[in-house]
Image (cartoon, rainbow, N blue to C red; front, side, top):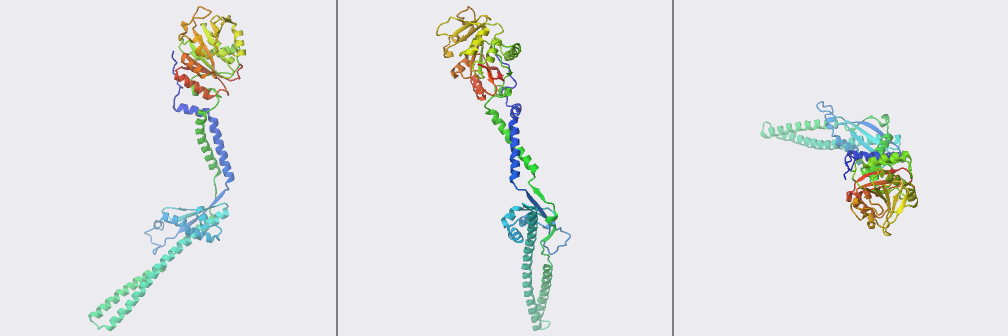
Length: 489
């Protein structure tokens, strides 16, 4: 007995992942909506902030400010200027300009500096709860930055001037000494010549020092100028609601993708055909009505289609069919109706019901016109169908392992107690709530498995458990019935 390979069976390709996402699209959509809701709540709780920007032009501190060979931007270190503008010293100066109402640490956190490589333009931005505070903060940081550069440049120039003045004073003293030596020396003597040479060197040095002093005194120590005040630039308000909502949605969808696989793996109940097909990898047929016995023509046609599809991949010599009913009260009318349709090929068939339901068995007995035959007291109850000579119904007592009709491994070798003929097929209907030993024992001895599920009631874990046991004994699953109604017992 063989089963044709189903292209959907347990493949871990991209199709399986896409199928999972299609099945659980609701989880993904729900997580996306939750992400948007959380983003909206964040925007509601987060007060909007305004960012103002002041444009500055930085002066290069140089003794040759108008040297055409070098641009001002080329003489500036962008990284150094940015760090200076965001330094604690500048923040302290800005705090003083703002009247001390905001401390330096808060100013550093609220401000940012952007430099433009190759130019002397610096942008100082400040973020606050109101546009007025943002403008006030940006102008204060910009002015404090310029003041700091001015103070530092002035200190450096003053230090250089002090050194030049000291050297110039010493040179003038040396010049006076040189003149005294010339006066005291005899004209034309070596001492007079040496004194004259010293005087000339001192004069040259004094001239150089005076020129250097003039250059230093002409240095512009202004830190720069404000090109555009913050009030004259546009105010940027944030955070941008569209971006925040979009980020929330995308984050929710990303989490939803992960949750979809988790939910799909641990789903508690079977709710749709795809849930069964995904786990079992075999065809699933949906019965939308509630057939009783006898079934009407439309229902019989549906069940016959299911029978043909179930048996399409099964070897015709398969003689033992195990039906595990997980649809509720046992046996369900749909299961019995399907079993009856399976016996319509006129082959001698034995229908085995380990536990009979009073109402279900009564309908089955009336439909088949069953007549109990005498058997050994320890054997199963046996019934012959007077309306269909090819059907026998057996109701074993206790464990299936002790039932007489399972004594022989090959069905054709067993002879009926009341008929001198061989049984061509056995159909055993078990409840999913039957003893595990009975289910395992039956899976080992039967050729093919059929499952019956109830939408919204049957559990995925039951399906996985039965399939796991079937895989152990290599009992193939022909397919499943998914009931869309509450079965009657």
